[in-house]
Image (cartoon, rainbow, N blue to C red; front, top):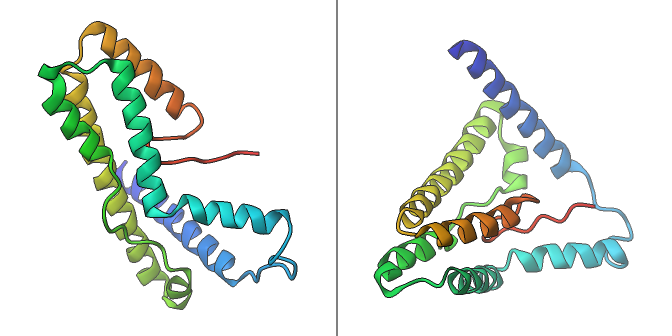
Length: 165
């Protein structure tokens, strides 16, 4: 069974690596400097501005805090939760040019390291969420469930927006 899972993970890593290399080698269209696709490109990069991302997260957390009506007894748990939801100060981003220069085993190792880093971030957030959730009363839990379900419905988290279509 473990061999089967390993084989799938290796296959996924190889396909992802090949996809990144193929995408990194695809030149942008000649008219990429103007028009709707350029506007989308600029909006996409604006979303990744760390200051704007932190601002969006703070806004969502403020709205959630208000809806939950956090009590003074829950303040410490809220603070821990809110701090855990903040993006890390330094997140290693995928350097497509560097990936294109790597051999396949190095590319797989690099992508594994990125995946492990993101998994550790997700685990940290998940534990903080569960800890905070345990401090809520039944009404607050329902509100929290409704709000986070709404955020997650389209693959959105506290700091992520993915527009489809």
